[in-house]
Amino acid sequence: MTAVFALATALLWGFADFGGGLLTRRIPALTVVVVSQSLAVLVLGAVVVATGAWTEAGPGLWYAVAAGVVGPAAMLAFYKALALGPMGVVSPLGSLGVVVPVTVGLVLGDRPGLFQVGGVVAAIVGIVLAGGPELRGAPVQRQAVVLTLFAAFGFGAVMALIAEASTTLTGLFLALFVQRVTNVAVGGGALYLSVRRGGRALPEKGFGVIRGALPALAFVGLADVAANGTYALAAQRGPVLVAAVLASLYPVVTALAAFGVLRERLRAIQAAGAGLALVGTVLIASG
Image 1 (cartoon, helix red, strand yellow):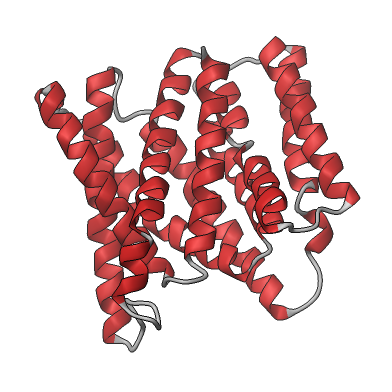
Image 2 (cartoon, one colour):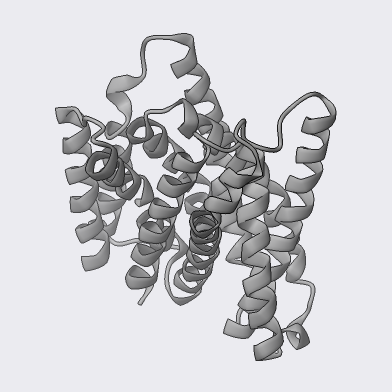
């Protein structure tokens, strides 16, 4: 079940990143973060009330708070990088954050088998190759790389923190709710400061753009929440190292979505990287 939950995480994060990247081309990135996470808070709040999850409040929720603080900063940096594009390059580099939870897993005692070690190496190299060919050129591209690497570390930290926030399903609902409330508070504060400094909260064409994009914003927020949940379940049911590497295949999903929908051209080495990541997935799962 670890592999199933982790691969579900990769799919959910991949499509959420694709949707978020598209939205930030029309709506300021901070606004995308705040609105999408606010919609997720509404849904999660209803789930917490319906399941009575608030009764499981405990010290572990501080991990959720920490994840909620780190997450918006990483998400904002990543969305800005995606807006600079191309998605098929930015997203794979974002997966380098896998180093954080993998290190945590090894410290906690994960001892992968030979096939799994080979799979981990193949998957990580494949993800890097999927983005490598475009890492030269204009300053804008270098800015996207810097933003993505910052985001990658943040994403890795969130993965490590949310896995520690709860050990039960209903407790996980509460942890995800707390994380999202913190996301909105931090993101909202950053948006307020941005507006005070002359930044924009609304698109150039006004609030109507946001109103029309509400379904897409809801999808991005809920897919991200669901991905955090499935990752936590994966990390609780098996080696953190396996869960983290499989979940971090989400950039391949984003790259393929960009290729299929936006017709972004993938170079041969990028396609080979995606194939190598797939081979790594099979090796990890078979181990």
